[in-house]
Structure formats: C-alpha cells, structure tokens
Image (cartoon, rainbow, N blue to C red; front, side):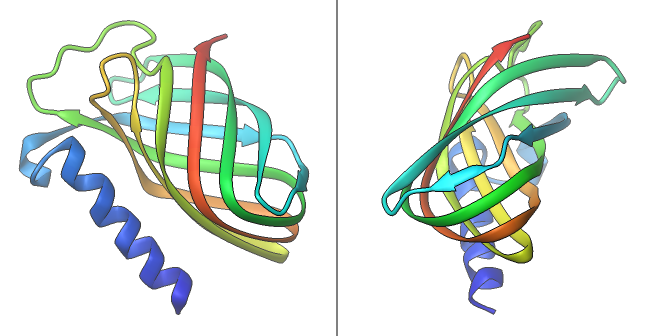
Length: 156
C-alpha cells in the first residue's frame, strides 16, 4: 500500500516539471534498461547498465549509463529491469541521442526474492525530457530503497 501511494506521488511529481497536462506532452517512446546487480549501502548505491530507447516511430537508440541512489538503499539485488515512458513538452525539438544527459528524481523499491519499484526522473540534454513511471522496476534480491535517484545516459 505504501509503495502504491509513493508511486502515485512520484508520478504526480514528474508530470508537473515536464508539462501541466498529458495534452501538452508528446510521448517519444519507451526506454528500457538492464541494470547490473550489486550491494546497496546504507546511504546509497551506484550501478551501471545498458538502455534501449524505442521511439514511437520504431527507431532504436542504445545508451550506456549509471543509476545512483542517495537515501536508504540497503540490501543485495540481482540484475534489475527498468522501463519508462519517455515524454517531452509538445513542440520541443529533439534530435539523435536526445536522451543523453543526466536525469534526477525520486525512487522507491522493495525486493524480497522478486522486487518492484517506481522511478520518476527529469533531465536530458535540454532538461525537458521526462521518464515517467511506467518505470516499473523488476528484479531479484533482498533490498529496500527510498530516496533521490540520478540516471546518466551516454550514447553507446
């Protein structure tokens, strides 16, 4: 229940900076990431991964990156899979590898064998791209995490 409420709060928090309503946003596609497993330290963690951006027109871009968490992040996780809907304000120009850059936001996650989480982030080259939770996170391990997250993406 708490995770569901936090996920709703996260979704509301991400929608405001990127656009006031869904009618003012353009859905660019979906970003899917595979993040390496590792150990969460009491105050944070940093893990590498690879991401694929599947654009609405079917074009595909590949990125490498790092996701870092600052806050409570305790436990051990296996490989984790994240998926975000990528949006930008309607009328924004985007080009090749437009997702490159740094994103920040809030995240929550719990793993007891199989885990679930939510991550809402804003950033990119022009700070006008939102990664909205459909960012459903799935993975394995024994872990709890709540805090501020950052994701840095570079073209592969």
